[in-house]
Length: 360
Image (cartoon, rainbow, N blue to C red; front, side, top):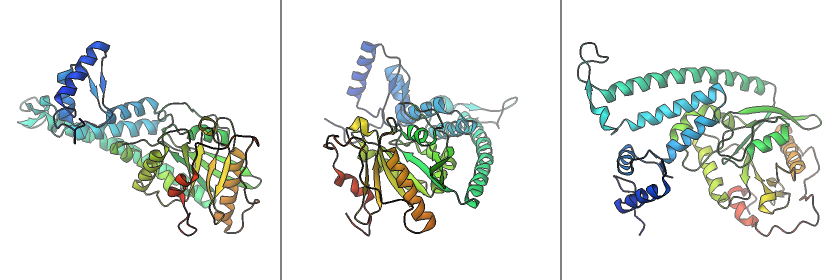
């Protein structure tokens, strides 16, 4: 029988905890990972009961981010998120933090608790990291203002982690940046100038991917980087067309965009990995003729010409305020004998992208 709410002491019931312990011995596992956040009390109790390290979803994501960070800014942002997470754990934390310290020859005043010393140390480190990140953010704002003065059309790739944003970025720019079939392969915002047509250029930015239950400390630490999307003229929301839970992924990305203030930025849905989903390349429009979504495969190149044309058309409409610079885009397929898109029901995708004026 499913519990109506997590157990306050163990997250799972005592019987399930004993079952996990038996399974641990059978598998000779050296750690347990919970796919949900745990309170400090739950984590402490589970560690004592199971006698192995217990890692929750938040710590796992933070560890992955720490391994993926490459730039100095990315490493600073992850370190700040880890410290913010540690600070949150000091409340009702571990028993060793309740010891009294202080007095002659000791740091801190007489009777000062260990938890207070630890909190002060973490606060100081967090403040230093924020100061260094603020300096980097000022440099980024200067670059953004320079782009704005040059009237450069800015496009940011957003989407759920492992949706193929970096692969699409490389396909459009030829940059050869790191792209892999793994979570959070990209943590650092990377921008490149792209010529989408003769006399038509954009600045394309690749950003960090989102994930369900993304730790709030990470969103706060990466807010400066994520704000690159707020200043964009257009967002390309890249969706893994082959993901069975793509609708949930779309909703989660939209939730994070709303949280960082980018929910109102114009958006074009890009359904990637159509080769894995068994779909055909397509550029779909609403009844008013506006482009609503593009189907493509960044890996094989199918549908990329349609996306380039869509960018040119959007650029013309947004920057010039007139008619598109190219002929209206029609639905295309690189293979005229391609099978119909039986797994795909367009009506289900229109719910999140329907024009409020034109209607469905």
